[in-house]
Amino acid sequence: MRRDIFQAIADPTRRAIITLIALQAMTPNAIADNFNTSRQSVSKHLRILTECQLVKQEQQGREIYYSLEIEKMKEIDKWIDQFRKIWEARFNQLDIVLANMKKKKI
Image (tube, rainbow, N blue to C red; front, side, top):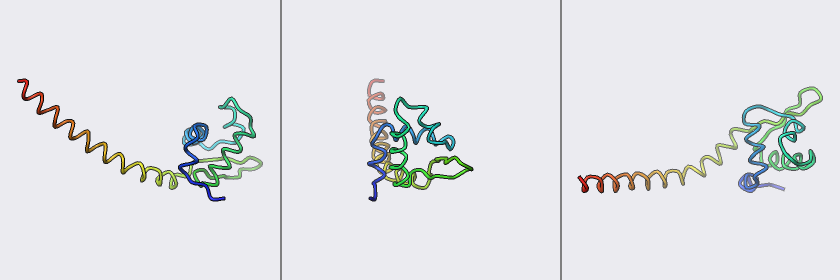
């Protein structure tokens, strides 16, 4: 089943996992140690993130390490950027209004 990256990041636990592995690759057990949930539950979240290609797996000896897939995160950033531009324009307009109000008080 093809999963949507936005559905994947909608879950707070998956966002927390992304935050953890953004700094360094981690094993499922190391990730699970940061949550008050079962290892099995963390594995389900990791599977969803992997299916969305937000994280990648790398075998190192007997361990599997999960790390963030930066290119896929750029897809999220691109979508958010459209809203960032809208809000920057609105804040710039607000700055102009406030500056005009301040001039009128002087």
